[in-house]
Amino acid sequence: MTACNNSHSSSRHQPVCCVYTGTENQPLLGYHPHQYQQQQQQHRHQGEYHLNISDEKNYASLEAEYPQSTSQCERASRRKKFRRHLLLLLVLGFVYFTFFHSCRNNYFHQHQDPDTFGRGSNTDNNSDRSNIAYPDSCLKHADTWEKPWVFDIDAANFQLKFGQGSMGSRVQVYTGAVQKPTFELYAKASLSEDEDGDEGDKRHRNSGNDDNSNRGDAIEVVRHGVHLEFKQSLELSEALIWFEDHYVEHGGYKYRACAQVDINIIVPESYKRYGSISVEGAVTSINAHDLDNIKFDKLNLVTATGNVITKDNIHADQFSTHVSAGNAEIESVQTASDDGREPLDVKVVVNTGHVVVGVETNPVGKNESRPHRILVQASTGSVKLDVAPAKAKSSGSMAQKPGHLQIDTSTNTGTVRNLIQLASEDQTLNLSSSSRTGTVDATVSDSFLGRFDLSTMVGNSKVVPALGSESSISYEKQTPHSKIGFKTLSDNKAYESEIKLRTITGRTFLEFIK
Image 1 (cartoon, rainbow, N blue to C red):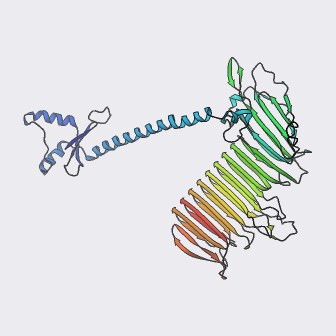
Image 2 (image 1 turned 135 degrees about the vertical axis):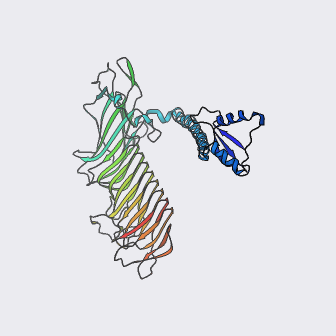
C-alpha cells in the first residue's frame, strides 16, 4: 500500500510517500511523488504501477532508484501529529480565556450585591480590586496632605477596615510617644487642575445616643474623595476607610482618580498591655514593629494583597494573619500570659506566597489542658516554622509545666521546614506537616519521645538519630518511601508525642539533635 503525506499541502517540506506492508502497516521506504509520476509516464502501457515488495531484487532496485529513508516518512507523520495537537491546545486555551475566565470576571464586577459596595462596607476579598495597587500615573497630579487626620482611640480594642475604591494603603502598628492609643491617617489623592489643594475637610457627626448609648458617636471625614468613618463605643473603636470613585481632568483629558493612604496605629510606650488590634481589607502592606514591651490579648492582621511583616517580639495570646496574595514574615510571637492563664494560639495562612514564622513558648499552669496551638499554611509557596522555649523565665508563682505543643504546617506546592526545640522531655509534641509537591523536613530536639510516621509516594524517607542519644529508634515499617516507628528510652514507657510528615512528590526527612 502507498500513502502520501503533505501531497496537497503548502508545507515547505517536499511531499513524501510511504510504502507499507499489508500486515504491519509500517512504512518501508519513502520517495517523492513527482519521481513516481515521471516513472508512471514511462509505463503508461502497463496500466497501474505496482511494487512487488516480496521480490528482494525489485526492493533493492527500488531502494536505489528512490533513496529516501523511512525516517523522512516518520518525521512527516510526527510533524502532522504535532500540528494537530498544537491546534487543539490553542482552541482549548482560546475557549477557556474567552468564555470561562471572562465570564467569571464579568460576573464578579457586574453581580455584586449593591449593599456590599455601599460605603466600603465590604472589607474582605470582595472589595474592589482597584484599591490593591495604584499606578504612578494616577498620582501624578495628587495633592499630598500636610496634616494627617488624628483620632484618639478610647476603647480597649481597635478595628481598622478598608472598603472600596482605587486606593493603595499601608499600615504600621507600633509603640510611640503618645498619651493615648492614637490613629493617624496621611494621604495624597488625585486632583483636577482647577481644584484647590487647600480645601478643608468635610466633617459630619452622627450621634448614636438615639438608638443605643453604648454605640457612641460616629464621625465621618471627607477630603478629595477619601472617606473616613470613625466610631467609638465602650468596648470597641472602629475606623472604616474607603475612596469615592470619580474622575479628575488635566489638559482636557479625564483620568480615574486614586489615592494613597498611610495609617499609623500607635500605642503609648507606657502601656504594658492592650486589648486587641485588628486590621482587615485590601491593604498593600502591614508592618508591626517596636512592640517588645507591650502585650496584647489578640492581634489580627489580614490583607487581600500585600505583605505582613513583624519585627522583634510580638506578645499576644492570640495572633492571626491571613494574606491572599503576598508573603508573611513573622519574626517572633510569644504568649502574652506568663502566669499560665492562656496558652499561645498562632494562625498564619497565606494563599499565594511564602511564610516564615518564629514562635517562643512560655510555661502554662500545671492544670492547663489546652495546648499551644500553632497553624501555618500556604496554598502555593514555602513554609518555614521555628519553635523554641522563651528565653525569659516565667515570673508566675503558681506551679507550671512546659505546655503541650500542637503544630500543623502544610502547603500544596513548596517546601515545608520545621525546627522544633522542646523545653524538656516532659513537653509533648504533636506535629503534622505535609506538602503535595515538595520536601517536608523536621529537625526536633532529642528530648522527643514518641511515635513518628514518614511517607512519600515519589521520593525517599529518612530518620537520623542524634549523636550520643540515650534513646533508641525502632521501626514498625521501614521502606525507601516510608518510615514508621518509635523513639523511646529503655523503660518502654508509652509516650503521647507523635510526628507525621507527608508528601506526594519529594522527600520526608526527620532529624533529632541535642
